[in-house]
Length: 108
Image (tube, rainbow, N blue to C red; front, side):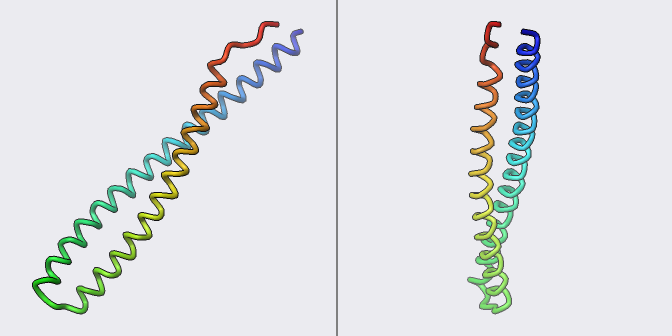
């Protein structure tokens, strides 16, 4: 009987460890998303400013810079989507582990 209780305790400790690891990964994923979102916002502002300048001055260098920034923006948007899906998956895993930890222990 003691062995069963120690096995249950060990598996709960394993669940706790998994939960902590997944929660840490989830928090990191959200922090990365926030950083990329901030970069995208700044990039949008820069593109808007340069587009305004381009409307006033027909400058090939400026047009090329805007094209480059738009490509970068597109790449960042793709990255944000991939990271959002990953964060959602991590959130689901964290919720599942939390539910498993909150279940009552079986009576011996």
